Length: 196
View 1 (tube, rainbow, N blue to C red):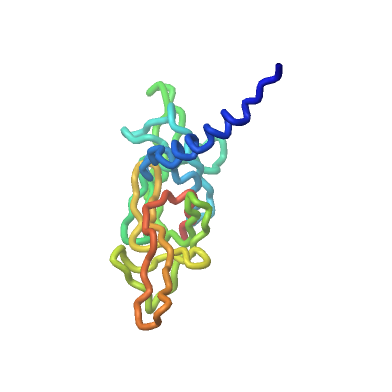
View 2: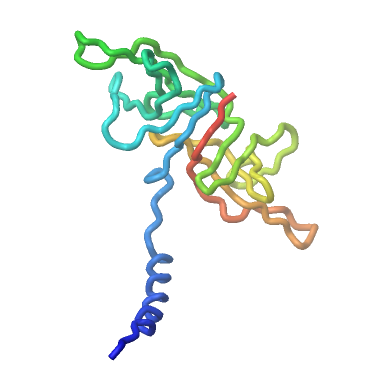
């Protein structure tokens, strides 16, 4: 006798859908990282996987940069948002020091630039908005446009895992006497940033 599991499986589908809808969402700072940083010099730096990595001056080497093998470079610690869209990272070059039993900082500089392009964790590519008249909402003015009605508003924020932006969607009123509003504003991890 052949037994069919189809009714049983079909009965489980709504439970899986409900479980997925009720699953806790990770806060923007957990799980997601800014994986790529392009410096003003066009040097690319990639996020180091969580776990063991170099620690210099008590800070974790979070991003390793394209550099010659004999002079490894990386971004140390968290980025610093100096003003709105202006970001700074501590760029260090390390060298092996036999006397110290590990690596030491050979060069240390603060690399600064304006975040001209963002790629959000959701995949949208966002360009710095122009100057002049800008739309302003409770969450801040539109600072990046991402195509269609998707925008980033307000200043960027930083933590040890990179940058965070507030993403929203412009909602155009049907009645032209009403003001445009920002729909579904939410923090989202910046997956990639290009500094100039």
